[in-house]
Length: 212
Image (tube, rainbow, N blue to C red; front, top):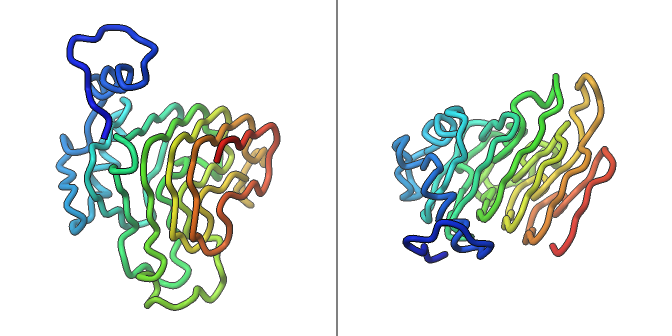
């Protein structure tokens, strides 16, 4: 866990900046996220994101169900490190679409400036669709999907056990305009044990993957 530094007002030190950001951000538990790894916290998370401010996810284990979480232009979601642990709700149906994080308007417009950092994402692949392989392996369940996203940054995210990709950059096949992912940076991430790919760039240009 990152330690906070009381009384710091300005610094380039990462821990001090994190303290200032956490102090200013909305916290998912303010929206009744319970972080015990049993109850589906998706509604609380989505409410925090929809409030429009940076969202801080404290250490704990959170279950995210439905089709995952939707982000808007300049959404900023960050945790305390890999102890901020988000798990896909078990028993998703075969072929059910799920992205732990994706742009809300991926099929109709470009989304700009997303930041996702310092989180652990787990698709729990062995607990989905009765534990068997997907009938159409698998473009439906990803950790982070940046479709039609530009100038976004994903940093220090551990993304594992998804039936699709840990991190996907590309476009929606029905999107207008069909630009794909452009000018995004993915760095310092750990991506492992995903069924289709660890990281995939399906469409786009000028994306940077470094130090992963």
